[in-house]
Image 1 (cartoon, helix red, strand yellow):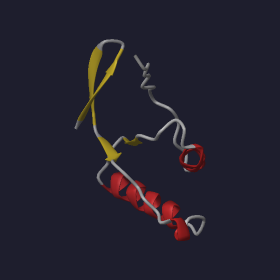
Image 2: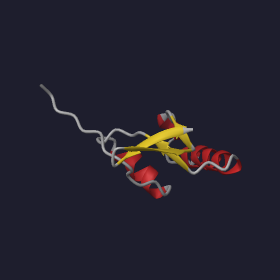
Image 3: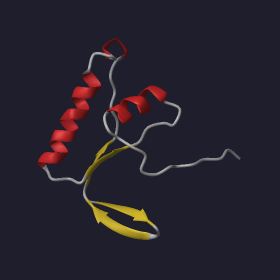
Image 4: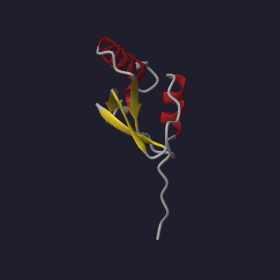
Length: 83
């Protein structure tokens, strides 16, 4: 179970979290990533988890487009400022 902070309060919820997904350059565009994420979705659904979460670098436009095409949307933003 993960705790999600929204509006200052912790809301208990069950999520699957994808730490990292890697597809070799030569295998990109062949549906490997899609099959991996479909497996994650089936795994989470079988365990009656409420959602799947993952992190992606804001500069990784290819990954962002991939995840959006898979039905993911932004949940929160992590901001940074160099000093």
